[in-house]
Image (cartoon, rainbow, N blue to C red):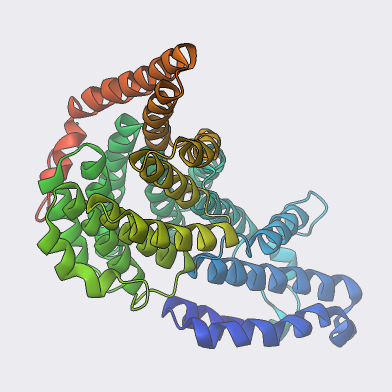
Length: 422
């Protein structure tokens, strides 16, 4: 009962009420076998494992929802070990566990579905932490598992998991600079949603947000603004509002629309942010740093970016760390401080390669090229130029390929039926 109550609090984003319940219930689960030994050691042990799974899933979701990516690592590892236990060949099938007295039964979700759920939360963690290739691997595993399960049963929860996996994958592709795959998957997402009106109503705002992110990556700023505003109109979720507003702020900055940016200020100020997420607050500091940089207020920009770095390092938010470092490198380059610029850009490049984030790599390689020229090192300057040209060419080819796909026209859809895609 306490776990179900916690799940409802998490669904309603009532984190301050959910957290104490998670702390309260932990000892009860730990002592389950002792408390219920009258059921028999084996049955009590199996019940404990299922309760533990439910508890760990809620704890992982809590940490991810509040943007604490580092804090979740140990719990996620425990969850992954738990799923290995209940999917082992010697573990009793769910039907056997259901034969005990009705009051003693507890199977929150079939273990095959739990397996997909663990893949999904692993993907969510990998994406937030900035490990895109790991997120891709686990998404592929989860979708194979969903396809197998759908041949036997058409469970609504599997369709929800499928949609969430595709949503995360689109974001990963955009970070990695693979817009062609991202827009193809946007097409897959619209097909999944158009076949289920309930799913469409629940995920419509997310779809608009993803179309907005894709349009931003394609430099289609009018379409991006239109999609992000559609997300704000159709969403009732505080976290999604915040995320859409933060991206809308970037759209305004890229178009030098300072008055529109200032009009958004109350909604994206780190001190007044409506979101409870550590990650979102760190991103808000970064966007303020970006705005100060564009206004040539370098001291102010550095102050915001150091705050971003402090928060990003505390929770292993690798993307925000790499973006902040490269922007700081750009600031020091603008101030003529080559040594400090190099100290920022080198780790930014290493981190961006690990993610991989091709846009940060492109940005960092442009700064490195200039730094080597300032140092009078023509060999390294040429290497930097070659690296920059390589990233640039790859992105341009991919950009052109994405525009040729039918799915690209989705950026102009905000209402009514989806455009026809073969």
